Image 1 (cartoon, rainbow, N blue to C red):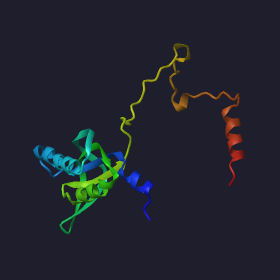
Image 2: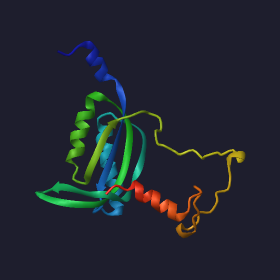
Image 3: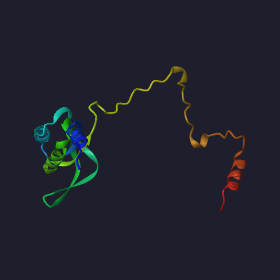
Amino acid sequence: MVTATDKEEKDISRIYEVGYLLSADIAEEKVAEETGKIRTIIEKEGGLPISDEFPKLRQLAYTLIKRLGGKNLKVTSAYFGWYKFELSSDFIGKIKSELEKLSSIVRFLLIKTARENTMYVPRPVYRRPELMHKKEPTKPAHEVTHTTGMTDAELDKTIADLVVE
């Protein structure tokens, strides 16, 4: 049973982001055209653009298998891009099914997100000058001196006593 609260929740616009991998077989001149198809699908359903990143060719961390026309294609590199938009949750299922139909998309991920830029940017590390000290250079293993006050023979005997056979 659908309540009025459920219906109101469905009508609320939400922020979504689609990250996608386009086939590396696409000519570089045609990448903009394929990206335009993704934008068109989203905007046709009423999606309002927020931000995006034009796809860049990247080497993938692992090989993906894409089933296309009855054959399994091994994909080792692809154009990665993303598109952030605002849309009523009623239409997100239709967008997902339309994106699945595009043969140029190797894989995509459609998520609910925040409007703000959520990319992590590392902050520069500030160290107080009084806490900074020079590190002593490390010595090669054959030059290391023992600070325990034991001779090498005593150390060898202690180690032999600790080793259980």
